[in-house]
Each structure stands twice: as structure tokens, then as C-alpha cells.
Length: 291
Image 1 (cartoon, rainbow, N blue to C red):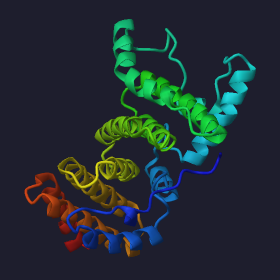
Image 2 (cartoon, one colour; image 1 turned 120 degrees about the vertical axis):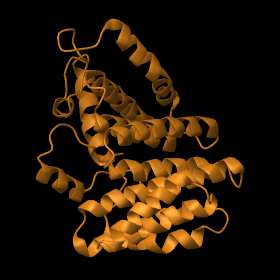
Image 3 (spheres, helix red, strand yellow; image 1 turned 60 degrees about the vertical axis):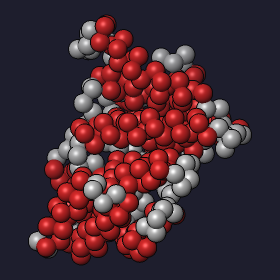
Image 4 (cartoon, one colour; image 1 turned 90 degrees about the vertical axis):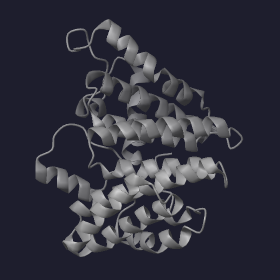
């Protein structure tokens, strides 16, 4: 139960309209060189340390599930009165009247806005005992991240980690409940969008956002809606690789930039006038020329 969530291999994305040939080869190279980008990597941590970054950070699912399991057991044994060290390190927990800068009205708006996501998480029961136990931990985690955002609406890591919880919950849905899975993935995408808006260099968020969009596309088969989702996924995937190329060692930079180029090209292949992907392709080509 404490094993990290499996990263969906990038090469498993069966792209429509022959885009597979454009995508697979570079991805294998990146997967071999880098740690699974489903979680915050050691390189990201080193980069943050070098920059003197403070505050919360994106956690791996192993860390999240392991520590929150312990927190849940402690809270259950103490009537829920114990605030965990996990929450302390990340500024989580209920904002008291003295510490909160938000009015009651704005807090109600905040809670109302996120009711849908929380209801979706609570609706997931899991298909077996392990799944049910895992989902209880994920529900507990979701409440923690809501508390973190309640304290600071501009915390990208809280949005990123909340998106991970939603995405993991989608994996925990009964296979016959495709509508619930899709709704959870849609909410996860919204949280990834907010995380990257607040922190445009959060490459893990772009990558996992791309996976969530791709999963939504797979559920739709070969339809126009799926094609639209695929191009979004490829563009986000390219953005994630582009941001990753900034912090990796020089010997790995060119390989990752070329992989990003392939994703932007594949997105444009699906829609020739996809202006965002065209612009992103131009910026990453400039990066390659400057190497």
C-alpha cells in the first residue's frame, strides 16, 4: 500500500493519425536517463536547494501515502486533535481565526468552488480492501491540501499535490465507472493548470498533466474530442521536457530538448494551426541552436 504509483510509460500513449512514430523513440531515451517524472525528482530538489527555495514542495506518492497513513492513524487515536509533522512542514492544517487572512464569505466561496473535487474523491470506494484503505488515505490527503490552499491561495505545490491525489483516486476507481474516472482526471487537470500558472517551471506538473489528459483521450477512442485532448497532452508534455532541460546536466540537455521538439511537432501534426505548440516549438528550437 505504500508503494509509489506506477508511472505510465510515455511510449504507451497510442497516438492517433500515425503520431506514434513521431513520439516513441525520443521518449525511451528520456525514460532511461531520468527518474520517473510522476514525482518530484532529486534533481529538482537539488535545483531548489541551489536557489535557496523555501516552503512546501511536491511530494512523491510514496511520501504522501506513507506519511499520511501515519498521520491518519495518529489522528484517529487522538480524536483528530493531532496536527502532523507532515502538515507542519508544508503549512497545512485548518487556518485559525487569528491566522487566516480571508473573510468568512471568501472562505465559503473557496469551499464551494472545491466541493466538486472533494465529493468526487469521497465517492471513490476502491475495488478491494487495499483499494479502500488507499482511498481513505487519499481523502485525508485531499483535505490537507485544501487546508494548505486555504492558508495560501498562491501555493503551486499544494495545487500540484492535490492534482496528484485526484489522479491517484482516478486510478482507484472501479473499471466500470468510466464517468467517475474521467471527472476525477478533469479536476486533476484543473489543479495542474493552476499549479503551472503559479509556477511555470514546475515540470513535473506539466508531465503528469499530460498523462491525465492522455488518459482522458484514451477513454474516448478515435474521436474528434480525443484528438483535441491528444494535442493538448503532447504540447504539455513538450513543455515539461523543456523545463526539465533547464536543470539537467549539460550532457543530457540536448537529448531532452530533442524529445520536447518531437512532442511539439506531434501536437502540430494533429492540428497544423495549433499556435501555442508552434510558438513552443520555436522557443525550444532556439534553445537547441544555442547549445
